[in-house]
Image 1 (cartoon, protein in one colour):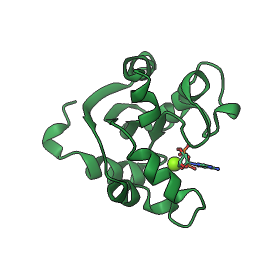
Image 2 (cartoon, helix red, strand yellow):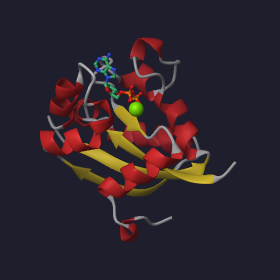
Image 3 (cartoon, protein in one colour):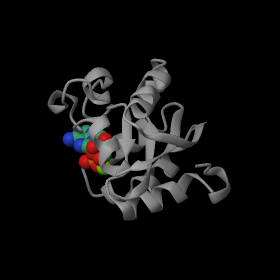
Length: 140
Ligand code: DAT
Ligand code: MG
């Protein structure tokens, strides 16, 4: 398996409840290294660009408003098979379907407010990392 990097976002529902550390611990416990991390707040327009792939879906407006509703912690996670490993740590999109012990099973409030984002493929990981970070900010 290849050494990969993936983009993670700890979403506003989680930062609001002070869960940043507990969620980051799950990444580290799974062997993922946090090689970049910052706390920011997006505008709805910025969230709209980030989630452009979902713009035709009925929940797009709600999703952009939610992602701009409070601070988020954006991180780059590195490790062997990091993209799939992070998706495992996150759990299914809908917390009702998420396996026990995953971030979404333990913390997510609903399918819309589900605590974390993670890239889904190498191509999207590269685009999403570049959306938030310059090369100088990635310290492996
Ligand atoms: P994931 O975040 O697991 O990659 P996705 O890419 O299908 O899931 O959707 C992106 C986000 O959009 C998801 O984390 C929360 C929101 N979302 C997805 N399906 C939804 C739905 N049925 N109702 C409300 N929000 C939804
Ligand atoms: Mg997705």
